[in-house]
Amino acid sequence: MTMTKMPSENHTNSADSDDEPFVELDPAGRYGRYGDLLGAGAVKRVYRGFDQEEGIEVAWNQVRISSLSKNMSMVERLFSEVRLLRSLRHENIIALYSVWFDKEPNNLNFITEVCTSGNLRDYRKRHRHVSTKALKKWSRQILLGLEYLHNHDPCIIHRDLNCSNIFMNGNVGQIKIGDLGMAAIVGRNHAAHTILGTPEFMAPELYEENYTEQVDIYSFGMCVLEMVTLEIPYKECRSIPLIYKKVISGQRPDSLGKVKDPEVKAFIELCIDHTPSKRPSATQLLEHPFFHGLDEDEQPVLVDDGRGPSADDLSTLHLH
Image (cartoon, rainbow, N blue to C red; front, side, top):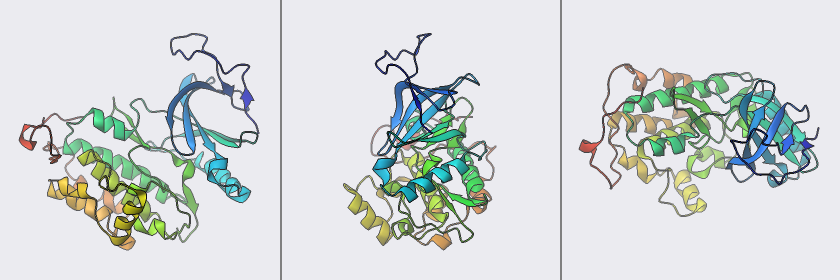
């Protein structure tokens, strides 16, 4: 199936314009894509889109297949996996509404829901004074999403979980895991064999091309670390090979030393254990004492970032 190009792509993008034209439509003519970009990665671009049937804004994702591989069998597998992901429905997973392959520009297109406050990385940077209680609530929601994926039949491994593809509806404190287009769907042995991910968040076994859903638990631990410290793990490494060397050898990121709350630090260390079998499952982590007493007031996370006010001066404002 191919998309429908609109007569002109040279238009003024104005959110206030009543007659803002679509750049293109999906094959069924339901979803329209505007020209403004919401985000971009190595192989994917995300545009603002609109569902004309439901009257809601959506995200129009385009993956450049040529940037991934010239192997058509891989393309076909990717397409079939994304189609399966379309059937997923969970409050902590970004909903995938539609998917199709456009042969001429060799793009895989899929429509997803959008979150009002953007990704968790940017949201956390905008709101620096966040309580331990709020971070635990966010973490629990991420785990609920992972539990749903990992317990799905067949098992689904995200493989690229990081704070830039976890999204937030900030007005209600709702977390949603996104970027599932590159997830791996695996059989009964829950084993996958393709290297994919963001180096700073990749578990050591991912580099060995033989891994299970426990790689997502490792990435989740790194996400918690970033949420606490406001630093991307392994920031001290100036190249991907240096990150790889540290990860493979079991060296923890320097930012872990900035986590002053012993309970939070121990929880992160549990998730990023170098040995996959020692990492708890998402279900086990949800039952961990770390999440007990979320309805009680807690002190803000103490992080020694070497700048700004001291820990004693941090705001005790809670996000509910």
